[in-house]
Length: 289
Length: 289
Image 1: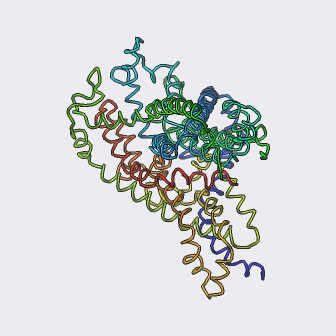
Image 2: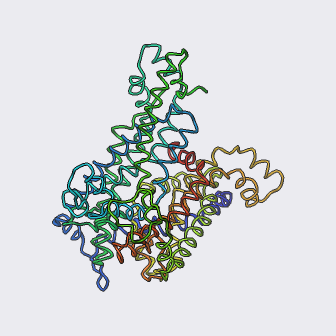
Image 3: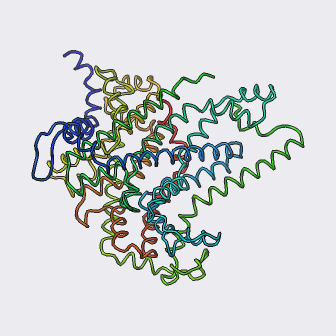
């Protein structure tokens, strides 16, 4: 008791934050696990054990959404990271004002909301009047219903994200590049390394913590893609852009099967968690200068 | 400290010339990529300020000869636009102010106070940052229904205040404040709360600025939570309202781009005014764990 009294200011300062955190994070996380074991609909609530998980395993739309989300992530994250690395390497040696200008230019699409970006690209992808088909026609290709075709819908969303994305990664990578000690480059150049060699042998290995961080956060965020799908395709055509989070939304708030949707969310969490651990394992060794 | 920025500038005339050519090529490549990622935003604005009859003209006009505000007139004639804007402003501002207060209090306690259970609590916060928001979405929604907070400002605002990232960011920053300052405050007879308001908060301005800006932008842009927690047209935020407009008139591209431009303006202003914080602030919390 003495101890608790002595510590009272610490607890008092944490109390408002912790109260909200407990009600809106801790309780929902545990409760979400519990809900996944219920058949919870608007007028019905009963314990069904692992029934929801069995239903998920049998549901072909769930597997399709998992496949689409995986394809989306596999397509997007390497391109995002590659684009950010190339741009960072190119702008880092430039004069500070030019560097800042480019960082700002790439960052602006990043602060623009997904709703706005999706609306603009719906216009660009529009089959008869959109900008993309106009450019394709100039280049001699036939116009195409980008988002209306099973083969290109998911690809189109990936393309859009690659073109618009990478802004925050560039800021982080160039900051990390700035903290690499210069004498390492001096040593490399003394040993006769070219700039390209220095980039791959010095810069990239020392950027490993940053790359790991971006890989993990990029994977988590692309596994959560929702707004673009909601606005642009609603999961179609023929489920070709149905992603996990869109499926969760659809199950919970269109079909009102809260128990089943909770089970889907638990599966999403398990996958994201496993992916993060794998990435840490493979890339997580400490870096020493 | 010398950084690798200087690596490109080698002595000797021949080298300098070669470097300049390399630099010009680098700038050209980066500029092309930057134009690509800004082009959709340019196209959004240009479409919005075209004569409505010329929006779908083929071939499209890259630089419209006749400017017109007709699309914006259509936009402002929509009944609820002002209300949605007001809702977004209320939600984003309240969440930001509350989050700054709550997170800085807790961050201060985690950084500078000793109390039993401190480390366990802090790891709960950090660990929950890895959990995808969709996992808590459904239980949180049911909880809000039990509190009768569905379709209210409380429902829109309260859960977002609890986001653990703010506490993490404030703690990381406040750890770097020297303890002597707090001790000096105690000797001068300041109360615990006085030390927080008069010493700790003013010294934490850089971190508060970063957290405030990031919170405001992400709340203004948020989509999934406002989508599920509101169910009347009056309570929609601007982002959800725009998405509904997109569903209502999917081919009215002039009007839609006017709406997108309108919603992008406040964030663009915030970004341009506080660019410095965006481009440096990202690194405060991200990498030093």
